[in-house]
Picture 1 (cartoon, rainbow, N blue to C red):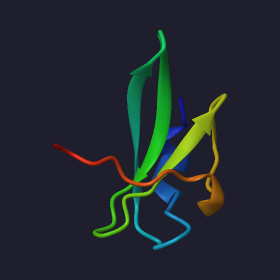
Picture 2: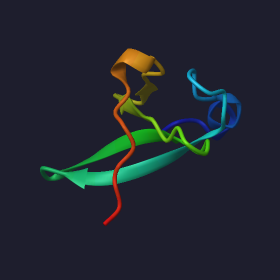
Picture 3: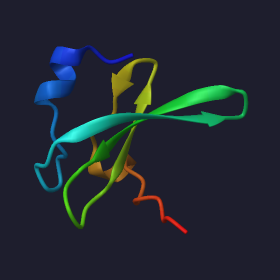
Length: 66
């Protein structure tokens, strides 16, 4: 889990918008992602062992909604 104070100051390195923590069940574990809230961006940054990986090259594209 990411510290609330840290989460308040983190921004998307691509568009500088705020990010929010989201959890997703996967293979019996829970994956954590920091998701950009910027309109038109939506990149998802992985959190590994409680450490946010805020590198554009490590980000995943936004999830498509059906």
